[in-house]
Image (cartoon, rainbow, N blue to C red; front, side):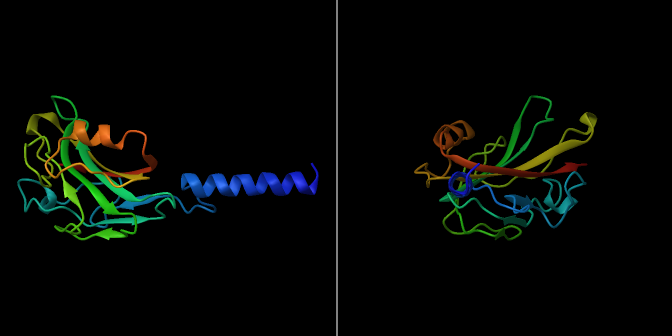
Length: 174
């Protein structure tokens, strides 16, 4: 391969990386909850039977193409199927953390499976054992015009075609 072609290939790869949010040397789009390690138990204060407060979440290496972030927390192990605990959109792409029990003022909150526009923590039926609770963060190339109180179906429809990155972490309960 000639130096000229090698340079073009490198340029194209760098351009593709910047457009897709892919990063070099392990700088991957991430979300973490300092209160629990990935795959480990979620402390009781974040459960509905506890204080029912949202945990602190930290983000890193948001894709360069992102204009906003969407957060969805759900339980795929619920007896009736996927159970949504929290829907948040229009977080700034510059967001590095969401403090415990707080959201930035620009954030919009949707209706969860408890029919509330808020965070509602784990509350699995006792006979169903341990459940997994996923916190998925989506980077979008737009800011959504969806009104506060929208449901998950509307949120996912609005996100369709605008996702430039996805990351997740999860905890278990009880």
